[in-house]
Amino acid sequence: MATQKLKRYGQQIGLKPEAYQKYIEHHANVWPQVLKMIYDCNIRNYTIFFKDNLLFAYFEYIGDDFAADMAKMAADPVTQDWWAIMMPMQQPIPTRKEGEWWADMQEVFHAD
Image (cartoon, one colour):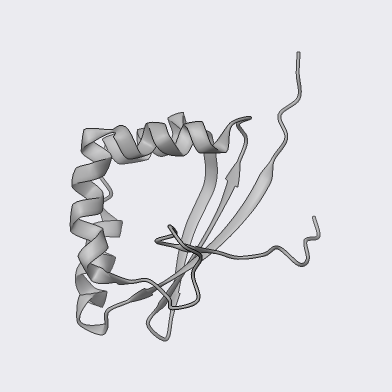
């Protein structure tokens, strides 16, 4: 039995100030199909934090092909519907890399 390699991800994006309440309300009741797709795409321990109009996401990836799993998620119609609601509330940060919506962050320290 192969052991799964866990990779931690941190990401950042802005949240438009006027969208805060709606964003919180939606995330208090995330659609079950969206949660299932996150799980099916090998993401675990997914958490989003908020401070000063910035969202910080943390998750752990246990799969072996992140790009394929993200493509699977992006192709899912229910996830697309969810993103269509979330994306207008978000404000990508100016320093993100080409093609990123949420800006990936570099892990610089971890302790168990």
